Length: 194
Image 1: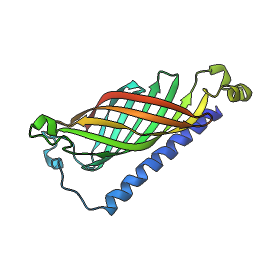
Image 2: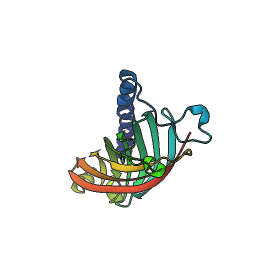
Image 3: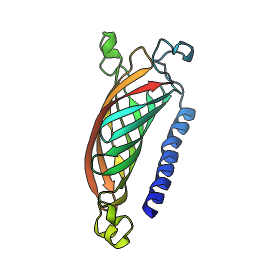
């Protein structure tokens, strides 16, 4: 039970830390030329800064995904998902998009936006269910319990002239405590932008 409480507290801290840089950057930097349309035209066009996208990601891990655009080329990505390694994960990333990164005249290619970023992950593993209530057994099984890690997502997002966005990403993860670990996560998903 203590691990579950620690996990919930860590998720709340992660969300607070993830959202803080976006607010500072949005206020500190001048607005860049927008590749998106005005909010009044959202019914027929793509997402705009200050919009929130909600959707799902399938892969490792699979679950819910949310994205908040702070500027036309920067966003905060968060998610809550289930890992096939018998764990529940919560993550948050600050992403830098390279708009028109492919420099092609074709409209379709101009709607594909590569991105990279950094973030954090909190992982609650329940691989050894019997060890959750037994502290001694939990210490012997480092795969059970709460751990944190650094995420470095790299991916592409297709933002067509609609309120939907499709994305695919690879995410190296470097974990810290109770035992260090390295993972390569990845997935593809879709979001609807409000």
